[in-house]
Every structure is written in structure tokens, then in C-alpha cells.
Image (tube, rainbow, N blue to C red; front, side, top):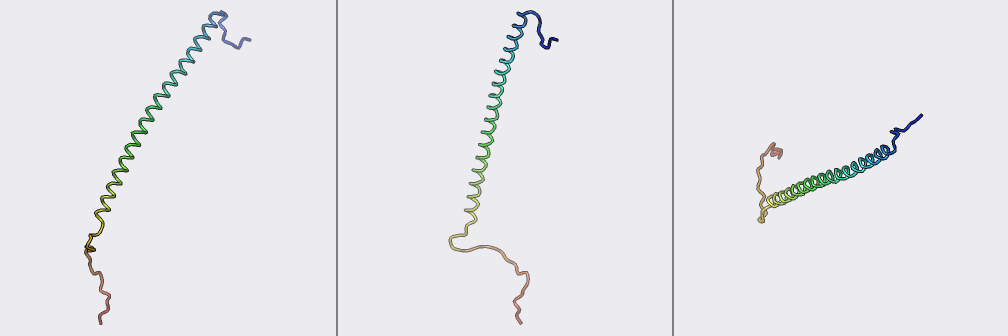
Length: 93
């Protein structure tokens, strides 16, 4: 019983080994470059998303600061507002 895939010709066997080694080498090189390209794309997308989040947080912080500056009471100490008497519970009798 022959369990190998021998062609019987030693030159054909060497040729199969050389072609197989070249195919494996080419797939490793192409896989490496595909990994580098995909990694670069992911890195650029992460940088763009990080920049957008930073810009949004910066804009949000400046907006919050401007809102708190407007909400401060005036220097004279006057607080403006409206009120309505709901029930008169003073008990004037």
C-alpha cells in the first residue's frame, strides 16, 4: 500500500515540491500584505473616529461653559422670576 501521492518520476516529485513551496511562500507574503493593509485601514478609521469624538467633546464642553456663564446671577444680586399663589394657608381669622 502506497499512502503518498508519488508520481513515480523524481523530477516531477521535485517540481511538485518546489511549486508547493512557492505557493506557500506566496500565500504567506500576500497574507502579510493583506494584514498590513487591513491593519492600516483599521488604524486610520480609529484615528478618524477618535478625532471626531474629541472634537465633539471639546465643542460640548465649550457649550456647557457658555451656558453656565449665562446662568450666573447678575452682580446686583437680583434674581428674576415669576410666582403664583396656589393656596392661601395663612389662616387670617
